[in-house]
Structure formats: C-alpha cells, structure tokens
Image (cartoon, rainbow, N blue to C red; front, side):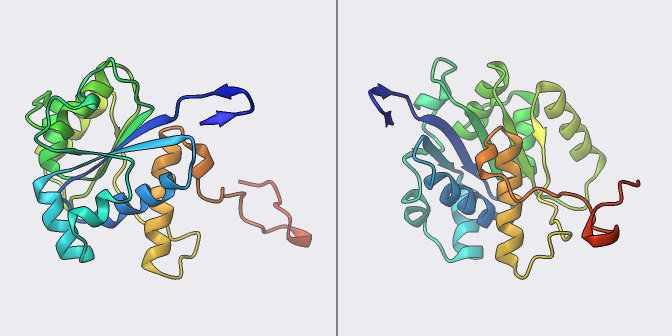
Length: 208
C-alpha cells in the first residue's frame, strides 16, 4: 500500500475455516477484510470445512478462495504462515471445530490450520477460535481452558439480539465484526453500544 511517498506493508490476517457449523461467518470475515486496502488475507480451509461450505452455503472451495488474497491447502505444512518468521497480524478460526480446538490446545500440529494457530500462540499474536459446539461436555471445557491458558481467545459465535437483527445475515455480520474487532481490527467493529436511552429527552440517566 502506498501513502504519499511512503510504502507500508499490508497487514496479514489469516482466516481458517473448519468443519463446524457456521462457515458463513468465515466467509463474511473474508468479505469484510477484502474491503480494507491495507490488509492481505490468507485462507486455509480444512477438508471438513470444504464439505460444510457445500452443504450450508452451496459454495465450492473455489468460491471461497476467490475472496482471499492468498490461499493455502490444509496439507501445506510448509506454507509461509507455518513459520514464526512470517509476520501475521492475527488469525481467526471461523468456525472452529472441537477437533481443531483440541489440536491447538495440545500443540498437535498435524495440518496447516493447527500449525499456523500454534505459530500465533508461540509468537504472542492474537488467535481467536469461534468454537461451534453445544452442549459442551467436560472434555470440551478442559480443551477450552487449555487453549486459553496457551493464549487463545475462545469466542463461541453466540448471536447478539440487543442490536435487533432483522435477518440471519445481520447476525452473521455482527458476529464476524465483533470477532475481528477482538483481535485488534477495530475499523471493522460493529456499531458500539452506547447504553440504554432511558432518561428524559432520550438521554442516558447514568444509573446502573
């Protein structure tokens, strides 16, 4: 990206899509990130993620890859994002299956999703996991704790209803924006909550 006479490297953001339900959130993230000229997206889709994209969104792998700047195969363990020497702003796994979360929590890096995530953790970079599973048994919860202790952000895609969404697309958009903001991409944050307007003349009465 060029600003005036200066050249700034584009920020690199990794988006991984795994086989849990909710792949539309990862797709929406890619669309939002594509609007930012100073961001370069790197996409990894697991084998199960490809199946879920087809089932839930009627989308092929190529449909999703066209939304990213750089694409990597899940088996490509030697990709750029597999090395800590490659600068990455943040990584989001959206959605994140329990299998992927468990691999990340234990350092079992058998594919590029878990390896790139492990790199973010060891380098102290933001890693957000939109873990999509319910109900949760004790093993799931312990893996969440282990991943959190390693430095990951656990952010289940729980819908927010206070913005009064009119559609599923609104819920997906809000969830994607909230996750992106959480890893520091505040320019993509949803409209901020400013408090309930309960006082006279529509002003916040300051109680609570």
